[in-house]
Length: 123
Image: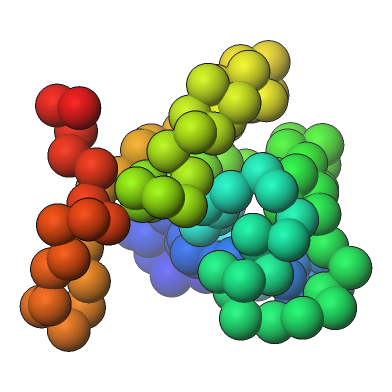
């Protein structure tokens, strides 16, 4: 641990979290940002581009939430036509868990905005 360092955090889609979490905690990890854009397992596989993960997207959140070892935040990028119909499901799923949820506007890294995918915060 480094003197004066208060937070060590990672951002993850959670695929390897179960396996790595004990070592990460031992190394000083005290915060996790989980990128979770859907609660539907088939959509989860599509988004993470990994078939056969046998990982329910809900398990991604529950594993660290049950351990309750750290500050936990879920970031959900809302995309029209993919997951905007799940917003209330996210609220219902996470309302009793010890975590914060942030709904984030879609921003493509290549700078090519497709207005059909973007669901603006004011909507």
